[in-house]
Amino acid sequence: MTSTALPTSTDLLLHQRDARGVHRLTLNSPDSFNTLSEAMLAAMQKALGLVADDAQARVLVIAAAGKAFCAGHNLKEMRAQPELAYYQKLFAQCTRMMLSLQNLPVPVIARVQGIATAAGCQLVAQCDLAVASDTARFGVNGIDVGLFAPHPACPWFATCMPNKPWKCC
Image (tube, one colour):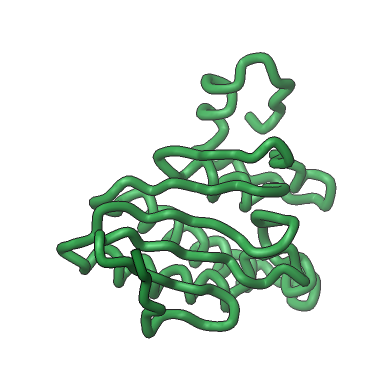
């Protein structure tokens, strides 16, 4: 089955759709461990809108290039603008994207091949299903840099992975 690159594809986010209606988003910023930069969040929001508008869409698969699935927010961007207004804008942008993902009319599958930390772990948790390789690792370690986001993913971890020492809530 062949797939077609869609107009929402950028260097940061590859968007393909095959004839069966399978959409695939590939986070494509391996040098930054596929962080959720402002540009990545904008590209994802645009792509999710395209998936939502596709009446023939059957499923969305989110994958990543490189050894990391997603390391969460781009801390370099955040440290460059240490102002409350910037953080509020960034977190609102991330919240919109996560809610758009959750509200898609098709199942969403995270294909996790590497580390998913902080908001990257939240990205996985927002999906309907996560398929993880044996090299996948998960962490909610934003607290290490003074960030703590009590997001909706916390109950998921406690319920679905009760034998792990989750400390996010």
